Image (cartoon, rainbow, N blue to C red; front, side, top):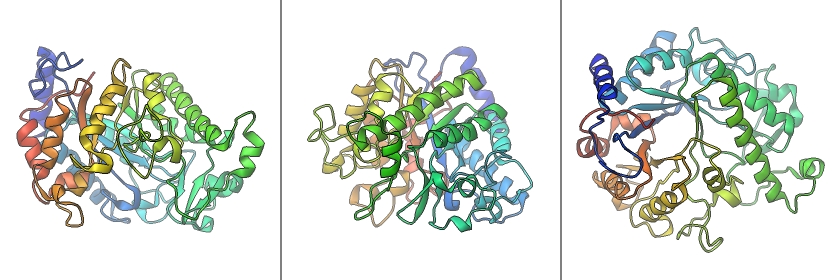
Length: 405
């Protein structure tokens, strides 16, 4: 299977014919397409299946996920290597992740990121290194962090919120540190891209306050309000990370996967015709629309985790909106797909129809800008409880293709 996939991709590269879907659409001259899956390590969501497995079992599980990506005719894996101010490689800046050994800071006896890069490339897959910039822990107790953890060495960097710990994005030293920690991986490994998810400032929690008032007083300068200052902090992170990636390793791309609604049109006439309760510009202080229109990033993968026709946030409306934002920007648009909802009885009826996700891809093909899709996440790509992923493959992925260049 691995040899066949690599050979097929090599032949496609030689001929320039990536013969699957979307001929003549937008900028896709050679019919290239992004077909990705997220591989999450936080709280052992996808991998490893539980902490404390022997190194050989962890490695075997990782390779099984890569092999599954090949079997599903995907061409990229977005691998979470810094889930919570920790590392899935031997970092000089942050401790080994507890999701490997079960004990933060304990060497697991192998190098997951190095292995993932090497084995993904053997299989003809891109490996995108996925980092969470500001999450420190999914609990609220600093004493549970290893003593050498930067968050314990610099407790003034940390804020507790919603039962979790976060680095404070408004502190310049924090912004410098998290970039240094992440770029260490770029300097060591031949990753194809750096990937951020949707977590910048944390999602709002009713009745709780992310208490950065003192930081705003110290660093807010001439900003008219805290929200503008917060957005500027995240703008700086994105711009500086983009520059750092290019200075560290030429050719590595930078992509971000935001929450799917930038702003509702009722809030801003530039926004989408949605009624979402969360708006990434206002609530996470992430002005993703600007990052795309200004060309600060190389690709954007909005998480459009709703069904076609869902009134508060219609998948069809959001594909239309993101298509218009990406047009002329030079930034690639890949659509984030909620495979995890397919077959979940707690979801609405469309998600229990195996054809819903296939309809998403069919609809996206009617627009010029979408150059592919990314599926959340690897566990569901493999289990495929109602056959939704199999239908996507049968309907849209008849042969391997190259990702967009």
